[in-house]
Image 1 (cartoon, helix red, strand yellow):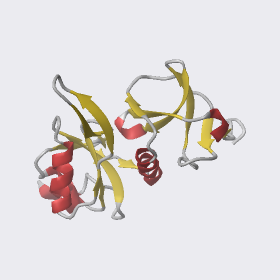
Image 2 (image 1 turned 90 degrees about the vertical axis):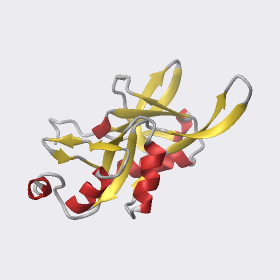
Image 3 (image 1 turned 180 degrees about the vertical axis):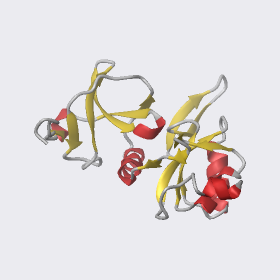
Length: 185
């Protein structure tokens, strides 16, 4: 059985990012256990204030619920991740784990470090102009311009897990990226 899994799970021997679906509310626990095993992982956390009936408290919550990203290179590490308490499954296509481009993980890290108010949505939004941020702490980030709830925001997609992150950016910070039309390519 392990022989069969090894031939179908990961396509390359170089380190790539993969999304692991977690048990409900187990993201932090899984990230800690993976770290203890020496497996590089990334759990994007955001600080927010939670209100209870008797108090308010600043807490760190996962930006994207039920997912932890792991940076692995082989089927042995793949199996070690799945054997970790809290891991449910990898995001796969045709029986193979789907690698997430390094650029998307770098963009996600940049967003989390920016102190901007972030919003994660599964909502299907109309495609707009491809844009890039030309100034500020998010300079170089690429995405799509959308209007959401009356404000102009930038949409950054994490394609393989069907999540989108909206961040408000001053329009003066944005430049339109040139796109090549299919018939011109």
